[in-house]
Amino acid sequence: MRVDAFDFDLPEDLIALRPARPRRAARLLIADGAATHDSTVETLPRRLRPGDLLVFNDTRVIPARLTGERRRETADGAGVARIEATLLKRLGPDTWLALAKPAKRLAPGDRIAFGALGAEVAGKGAEGLVSLRFDRAGAALDAAVAQAGVMPLPPYIAARRAPDAEDDTDYQTIFAENPGSVAAPTAALHFDETLMAALAARGVRTTRLTLHVGAGTFLPVKADDTADHRMHAEWGEIGAAAAEAVNAARADGGRVIAVGTTALRLLESAAAEDGVVRPWRGETDIFITPGWRFRAVDGLMTNFHLPRSTLFMLVSALMGLDRMKAVYAHAVAARYRFYSYGDASLLIP
Image (tube, rainbow, N blue to C red; front, side, top):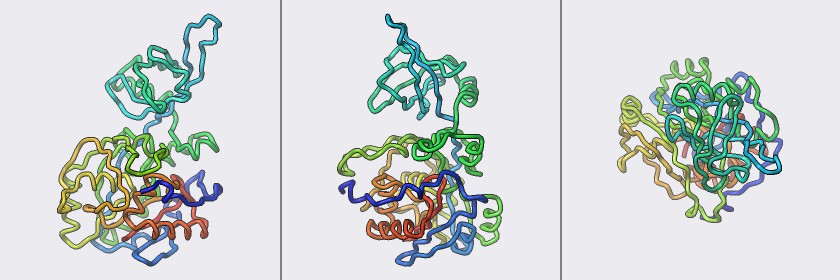
């Protein structure tokens, strides 16, 4: 399909720069079949049925954005350049794949000082990707990154304000346990302990999986046709307990509802043709566009996404492109807040 089919108009003032407080106070647009309802996240227990299963992503965002200086010996003394690097994927105990800005200032062998943390450019690829070999490894490197890095807010927030101490908690879900993401699974940001207790009282089941969100969530689709776009691979794992919870919910007549596109993508990666989900571990570059036959999920709770993005393509695959354009037009007209810190939608085909 042509990528411009997934375009829509979005006023810039609808981009949320801070989350709702409390988390469950965010608005919730419910698209259930052909019906559309305006509500709030705290009403979610009443919108679900006893026996439904919510699947959460328990990844933890690392402070992956580093700022430093490249220092290179030059005849004119102009060898210092300010560099920003966002860590994307660990390649080894001391090496990370990173997105560097401006990458044109870097060459293999260059040294970068991120405060007390040093790194060498071990390799350089396309679209700003570099591999960085640090001066420490393992747990020592993790500790140094935690000290030197900041929360990697999405570009549409970071361009309008700097990260601060509030983001250290605002940009983590209450399920965050396994470090490795450079972006939060933002649909789950709406959940707090009060909401979880109400869901349990309603008889709604929950389970967790892990997908470490990579840079692909930030990168624009540059191709003209979806067939020419390639997703970045992300690492994930579905344990035996989570797989059994999904299969048991479906066997009992419950609906499986992914909380976030990351949870949905991993479930669909692990599902067999008959819809059975088995324990799974590895990398996935699954790209879901209209025409996809969903095997593992019956619904999705997700935030509102960028025009022309792979995530808007995913929700259009679930609900239909015309239906999602109508849902988003309603959201814009009703002034829902968009993106990572914005409001949520509950999509039931």
